[in-house]
Amino acid sequence: MIVPDLHPDLKFRSLTPTVEELEFAFEAKKQALGPHIIQQWGWDEEFQRNVHARRMREKPFHQIVLNGQPIGTLSLQLLPEFIRFGEFYLIDSFRGIGIGSRVLDHCLQLADEKGLPVRLEYLLWNPVGSLYRRSGFVEVGRTPTHFLMERPTLKTSSEPSS
Image 1 (cartoon, rainbow, N blue to C red):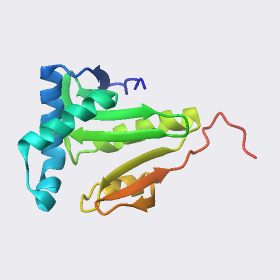
Image 2: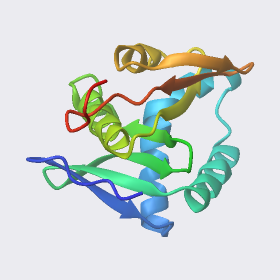
Image 3: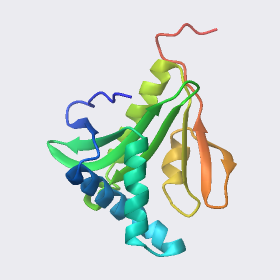
């Protein structure tokens, strides 16, 4: 799925699994998600690199670029019944300043324009859940390690109300 730029300062560039792009995406994941993985399982560098490389081959990844500087990654996948939001990682110095909310709101608006709900999952002990709940996501399931969340489609202003 193409993610249009969010003017005036955020761009979304499609990533391919080149060595450089794989390394940047992995470092963003390690900074953002690493502490939550370490908390439960410790960090196995080789295992995490292999999992991340596989995910980059399986899903469309985008690099999030702020004023020309790469600051994170996002996977937004258009499926027939919903949009899958995931692999959303911001590097340390860009978390907690509102960029994550802007990116998420932008993706939710794209989903609303397509008339599709958005689904995601996150680790049970990751505090990012508060962001998702504020954005209208509700828990639809749970695994031993993850919350499964969905944000229903909201009507866009161009749709007639009933």
